Image (tube, rainbow, N blue to C red; front, top):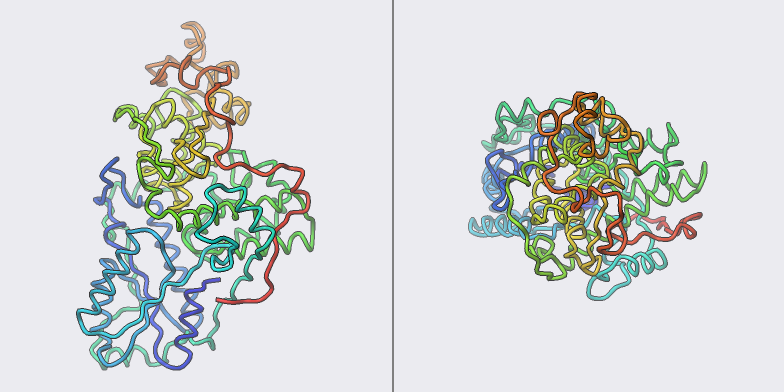
Length: 528
């Protein structure tokens, strides 16, 4: 279900050679490329490896269709110049097709490619094709962009719009097939383009320590033997929905934190474009038709709708999602404290739920939705740190990093987003820990130094006296950090906080009464 690829197939159906190209942009994939605010990397080695696997799988699937994939590392404008020169494109019009992007970094690349080719006198068309959403943006029932809050968006979309039918995968006869003698053709014109080269992490600029850091932790909540790529993504959808019937209980299990099956884990493949939200929604709809319809099956599609909203909201507001004052323009003072920020990143804050989640993120590239909300609230409200520090760090380490979802959810947590009207939701960390990790199993899994702490103190080890610490062989400040901020003031009390409205979600969720049947609709026709 790739609109850009299908559009390219149409362009090439009247003749010409279609050359699929993937570029690892040097300004993103390199351990030396750091953000200015937090010195985080644009892409950590774990996600880079995941994308390398996805590209290898893409090449394999294209080759099965008689095509191939050119993989390059560098600046896109330089690489397209190289390809245009080697293919001797001065006498023809070339078409460059990519998925539509909305932020300044990606738009700059489009402009740089266009400027470079124009300077060479090459005739070309650059086509940016919308994709990666449930709904077609051109069919949304709004003028001037989507509403600035989610509820009216959901109401109008579910009432008036239909989810597009996934596009069929191209076959050998659909215009993708390269000439059987393509390598001879390229050799005859002196072209050295290579259809077999695949870079390594080292080629992308990651060092030995980076490469060694991405080994799979046995505690990981990711599916067993997971890999980047469409092939594994489709198998995961099949396993989760059809083989194990896990979708039946999704609504009840989605706030879990241990194991691969409490949530779908589709996000990394969605973020990389290995699978489309329309494909997942179609499988949910088929499951409802063939097996059972419930609030759980609806809720999976609902969360894809939230994903759509964040992307369409980003289209409306552009780079404002990166601004310190957020999309609401709320000026707040943040306390610069690099020691606290480092403790938060390392999972050494002295708050077990926060530390367990941050350690899981560092070791696996994944964290539950429940965990993300808590660590965000802790960084922004309890530590008083700039929310963008957290957003940048998540950009580096998350396997499922998605620009709109990541940055807008951090804005929501910081109370600087129009999505929530600037409302600030404060999470009671101890209450959350006791509610969602009642037995302490998750804390003990990721903070093994607390293994022998009793259930009474597993969420609040700072309440132990000296005798109790010695009995479990955990002395605060020696075996486990003392809280870096006062628990009586900063999220360590079991008394609920009065600040803000609500304690669990940045985007208001619909009332359960309306979820028994669901309310999304499908368009049965295919269109690009």
